[in-house]
Image (cartoon, rainbow, N blue to C red; front, side):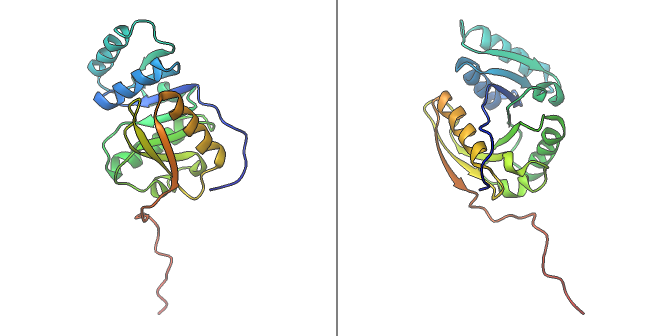
Length: 189
């Protein structure tokens, strides 16, 4: 984990993917008082989210819909993807988020199988990348996994955000062996 930085604060959250898990997470964030922008390429998923949000009564935060990742992350302090937990999908979304989100944005991915060290090595902001394993539902608990480049400020911001959602968080270094690391041993012939 890297050294000191200004303490980032999470107020605006981009949620990429409005399937069941992404939609539920976006609604929990809005109910907890965050400004949420939910993105999905399927308008039907966004309509479901709008209907469920209307049924919340008077949530403390607000929920907006976006049809592009660029629109979703424009003002985000934190971007969370809900794409399939497979390497190609995660690499593609991390690349998009990295290019389109402001430099301040923390990239977070729920992943039970992939190395955050690998994903972070493919972006320009490895110090602002984390993965979560466990339940992101209020009352749930997660492990917040971080790559070696992660900063203390990033981890504090993510812990504070999860705490505001009612999710218990325990931070620990990425335990997974990176699979994308280049072979550093060169054959000399």
